Length: 130
Length: 395
Image 1 (tube, rainbow over the protein chains, first blue to last red):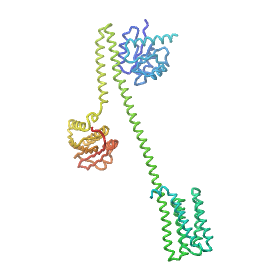
Image 2: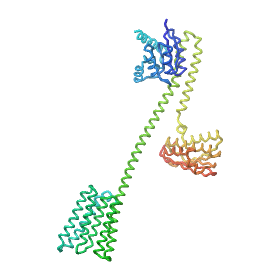
Image 3: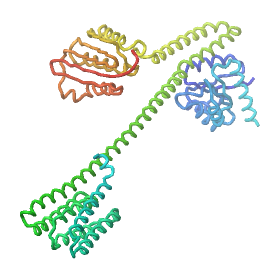
Image 4: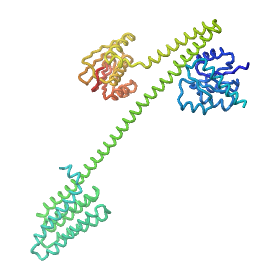
């Protein structure tokens, strides 16, 4: 079975580690790498070619929005899931324009987070193939 | 009365000019009533009055007109002086001319005209009346025309000064209003900045850690079923994360807590500070309190910081281990003296207030309407006196 390759992007190591632990428990997911800011996220997307990038919105060096734009310039097939504490309508519009596929709020149940990754992968995979 | 004249000075100048001209005209007519020369005299005076009216109407036109009109009027005055009866009261018309000159021209030109008029009339009086009778008239006429001129110029200058001070006052009021707006904006900005910083801090520290805790707890739940041996390390991690969240929360609360003055009041805060200084530095401060301060929170906060700064200065620079703080409060007025018997400093050092942070202390106090006086003599210690008047609640 082909696993969904996930790149985790967050500026806090403890968050990256927790996300990694969670995602590794799923048989169909594979964490292929981690990045601690938006710049590194774009570089690692080019290098590791993940299927989905799971990324925090707020980061100290190059935030999630600019990283999403950078990723979208490089690839249309990679899915982008943005994690936020809370998002306004304006932030949602900006994120969609930047190429983000979906939002998940911090505090979401593990199952829902995993489901969001699968859904985005499915959508992008179909788009990419279509 | 002077204010009324000043406000309607143009009207008064013209009324005075017309009054003199008309009264002299009447007097001439009465004197020449049964004389053959009456038509000539009346014609001259009518011409004088006509020219005066013309000048009134042309007052805002070119100054050349006024020069011309004054020359014509002076000519009429000379002719009147040379009439056979050799009267002397034509000289009073020079007051009318002086008023016209001082109204139409700036100070220098007006007084040149007045000088010329005085000279012409002096020559005519001495010629017509002789030295013994003419000289007193010359003196009185000269004094009269110069006094009239000086009076009008004085009123004009007073009014200009009044106008200028009104303009300055209005500018000052505008600047004050602008300053109030800027202050309010700066305060709002500070609040917004603080709120943004708080939100950022909460996101970057506590919420991220709690998010990690949530994820770890989820992982524990799944691992319990799939791989129970992995549960223990995840629980250790959870404990570590919760401790970290608590520490971060404690740090933030410490930063956000109210100041010691706001929490306990000025005097208890001072006592606490004094105790700390003695405990930490062996620095003995005698507190002498009389009355209960009635200050606003902001005033109490500022005065506390100034006292603290003054005591730190004594500790660092005065070369003594003792100081005295006296606080006297009566109604809404408070006087604080921070004194020491240390080495003091010179006038030059006071002038370089910056070096000792004295300028900052002064600014703090002035920001809440207080004042600060520094007295110091080398070898004899220093006394800093702060005064503030307020109508605030008791702190």
